[in-house]
Image 1 (tube, one colour):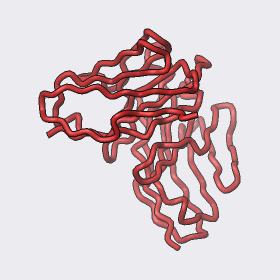
Image 2 (image 1 turned 90 degrees about the vertical axis):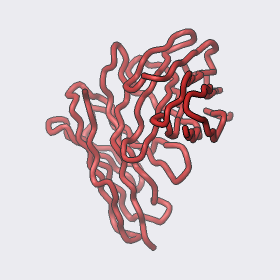
Image 3 (image 1 turned 120 degrees about the horizontal axis):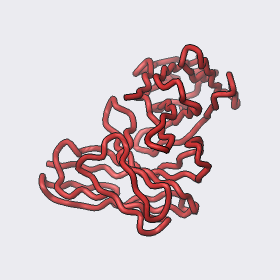
Length: 115
Length: 114
């Protein structure tokens, strides 16, 4: 059981470039999430998905898009990267009780720098 | 919007001492309060959680208390060890559309000195 994995681990982009971060989980979880972690600000929810084919906006969705074509994968896209998107990105997944009280399991993170 | 405040931002203790981290939340409908530990360069991992119908929960050296009236909850670590050194995050649920999301505190960096 690999749990939650993310690729790539590190990436450096120039302003205006695009990229996609991939998250995969092998726990058959329905819910998946993308967070960003900035110093002194904890984890903030970017987008989330409650099942295959569904996506929804979190607290800080601007500048990002997501897709959940397969249950086990959740992709985060940056169409035109900006320096403000320099951050560590974490993917997480959880099972579905509908209450929001299920344990979220996090991936190892992707450190993104936008120059 | 709803928020979670966490104090202190840094905490330094001697090995064997106790450590206490406190959080307050704003959403009176919050019903789930997990605590995550994040070691340097690693992913956050759940260490303990508490639901709104419980006032206290213990797991070995770790305990969490919840005061729903005052809207605050705390993490207590007893007999601290160097391996407890990490950043600790509290979180509380808050409704986003029809989904209960987690709102995280800003984190507490705990350093345990031998």
